[in-house]
Amino acid sequence: MTLAATKERKAPTRVLSYAGALLETMDAALANHANVFIMGQGVDDFKGIFGSTTGLAQKYGAERVFDVPLMEEGMTGVAIGAALVGDYPITTHIRADFSFLAMNQIINLAAKYRYMFGGSMSCPMLIRLVVGRSWGQGAQHSQSPQATFAHFPGLTVVMPATSQAILDMYPKIIARHPGPVISIEHRLLYNLDFTVSSNAPAIPLSTYIAREGKDVTVVATSVMVVEALRAAQYVKEAAGVEAEVIDLNSISHPDWELVVQSVRKTGRLVIADTSWLEYGVAAEVCRQLMLREPRALAAPPTMLGMASAPCPTAKSLEDLYYPSQHETVDAILAQVRGVGHGVALPTERSMTEAFKKFRGPF
Image 1 (tube, helix red, strand yellow):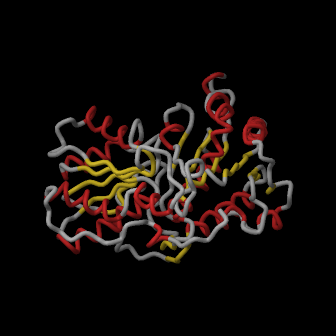
Image 2 (cartoon, rainbow, N blue to C red; image 1 turned 90 degrees about the vertical axis):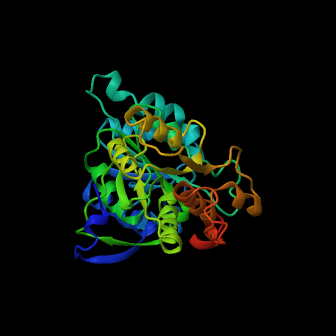
């Protein structure tokens, strides 16, 4: 599916923040489906999980939007039981790291019911995980575990990169997806504004082209899609390089043929993920490409992700830990022009310089 090809199409548009899109979809889910309820730490407080559930407890009552104890495994078990008897739970973890405490419930139970009972039982539910990142989250609040969850059959894993992706995917997931869906939402995206359209081609529960190009393919996830689009604009203006940006979007069920077609066209590949490279999404992209089109690349791919260590707490070290706009632009140019490309790079060294300022405490 190509979104760029329809950019000339006239449609009603509006500006909506990532958090605003989450709030709209959560509100609509409660309004349209009597069996939906939302549970999680802080979903009913005045900040409402960074604005994504604000006011919903007051609007729908404590029976449908409620806080939970610091007991992730137990509360995930409650959600699974509710799903099995016909309710639709939306569970939220204010940090993706907290879901590790519920791994037994998610992986050994929720993911496997349809398999263990021959399809007679299912566990439809949405698990929202917020990825930390920025201003000193440290080693235990910054992990991005998409590759871990995507490794297990029975789980659908998505990483919406824009407000439009949330508006298009969440209602479909809640209305009819038969199994557990894990959505990883990046904290840096929450305060970003996006243009959305009710008539735009729907972003699929799979993979799509966010920007067309002919010189190099950039496969990205989550906030790195936004970084890739910014980098693509920079290299076009600075060097005339046209980068094609693909939002992998669904980590567990991507459209690999779309990726292969793009690499066939460009012959060059940059992969930008939000997590570690070892045994991760970037490695899987390379594996799929080698299985399907091993001669497509004119040069070895470049991979961007977190440094191979737990995240440091110090802001100065954190800025070095994550790939910057400087590194993203350099990777794209090096693929097309070589390491000594000679193009001036952006001075920006951290995503936080462009995306958000400290807003604490979470």
